[in-house]
Image 1: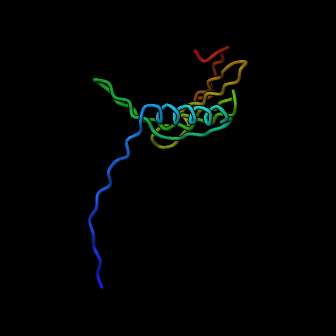
Image 2: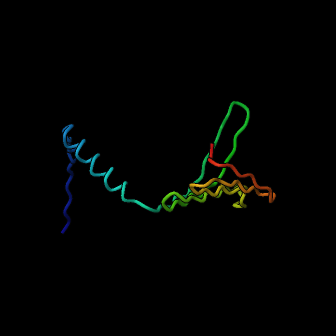
Image 3: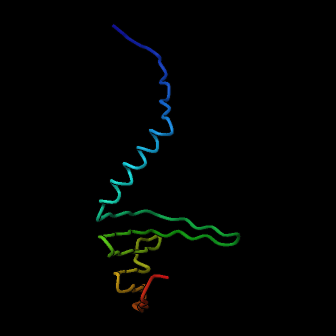
Length: 102
């Protein structure tokens, strides 16, 4: 016995008040988030050059640690931050510190 069928799903359209309620609920969920981790790769292209870099960003409350790596996976730099300041550690061993990341 063989059964087959075709059907298409009609997208459910939400009203503006429903979307607003969902957005507010999402914001409440995110406000309770104390720690997160994200990793990925970035490609940067200008008119004459291009770069690729990997990154991993770990955040726990106001503390963060960001690692940047070259295309071969070697660490190119690290950024460590606290409410008291931020430190950039370069791949060659040098470091630079400041009171804020800007």
